[in-house]
Amino acid sequence: MKTAFPYWRHRIAPVFDTARQILVVTSDAGMTTGKTEVTLADGHPTAKLLPLVELQVDSLVCGAISSQVRQMAVFYGITVVPFIAGDLDAIVRLWLAGKLAGDANAMPGCRRRWGRRSRDASLENVAPEELKAQNEPQDRLRIARHGRHSACQAAARRRKI
Image 1 (tube, rainbow, N blue to C red):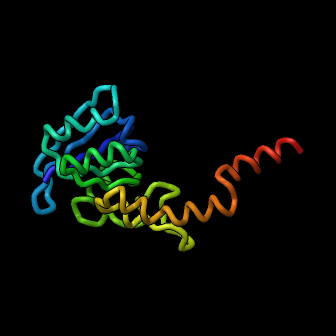
Image 2 (image 1 turned 45 degrees about the vertical axis):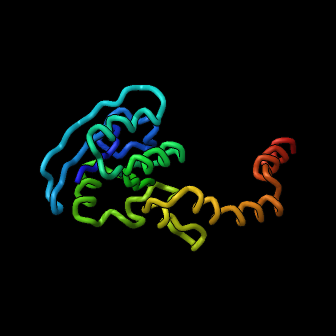
C-alpha cells in the first residue's frame, strides 16, 4: 500500500493545494518497505494529483484540501484522510499502526467538541453530494435566522460605534 503525506518543515502541510513536498510511504502489513520524496510543481492544485496517480498512491493523508481536489482524488481512486496535523514522522508511525483517527491529530478547529460538529465523515470517502445534503438544512436555518453575512454585519456595526 502506498500512502502520500504532503509536508512542510517536517510537519503535515496545512493545505494540500499549496504543498510542494510529498513523502510517499510504501508499506506492507504495517511495516515500511520504502519511502520516496516527491517535489510537486507549482500550478493548479488538481495537477498536484498527477504524480500521485503515476506513483499509484492508495491514500492521501493531508491537512486541509479543497473540495475540487478531494473530488478529483476520489475519482482517481485515492482515499483522502483530510484535516490531519502534526509532526510528519509521528503521523506516519500512527498511520502505519492504524491509530491515526481521533482528535489528537486533527487540525485546530476540526476537533469534535461541545457536540456541535463531527469530522468523522471527513475520515472516509464520502461523496460531496452526501456532505452537502447533510449540511444544507442547517445552513438554510442559520441564514434564515441571522442572514447570510450576519457576522460581517455585526463586525461593521461595532466598528461604527
